[in-house]
Length: 268
Image 1: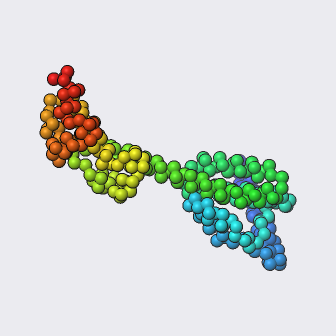
Image 2: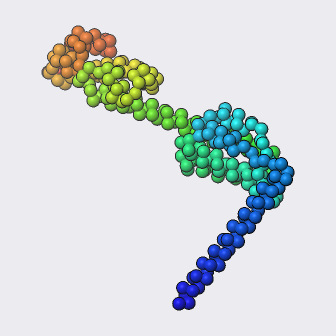
Image 3: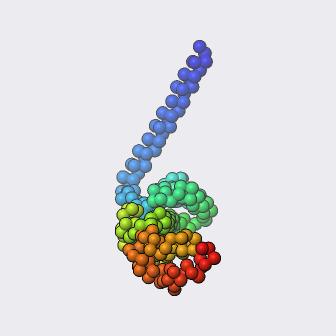
């Protein structure tokens, strides 16, 4: 079976190539470690790098700046024979790690990778080590800012969703007595937090919104239904007819009966 033999020979050959490459790499590693020991050189602190990446994941810009300003414990890694090209490679490697830390922090991968591509191009076009050093200081801050901005967007969207859920709850329970605590319990949030959020987003309190919506519905009932004011008050969950009349007057400047007479005279 010459075909099978040929395949086996090729596998053995490729295996030997991989083995030789592995041996070469291991040899280079040994040389580098020996040179570092001879020259009392140490790699930069891994803990410093971990702190910096964690600050990026948290979107903590001040923390990133502090970790970046920490003194280096050793020389910059050597990734190429030509020193300037090596510095570029190191910067690109750092950028790739920063981008992935940003993704861990909640940034969309497409956005992080697109930003990384942009930084890679800037690094490639750099013409001095000073420029590379500047990028090295700016990149972690940039990716931390991406995380911070994403967190703010998420918080805003979450707030908008809560407000819409609150409005939906009011709409679905118009025929009941509605309380802020009851809404908060249904939405699994703190009542004070929900109240503050709603006021900021809508410009009125939840209680004011409930009254407004109940009055709007009562207007339609006064115009288009034969129900008397007492029935409408009961139907919309007001504690009494007088309470309904008071709230209605606060919103419209007239009593329910006055409103019906003015706007429903052609209906009945």
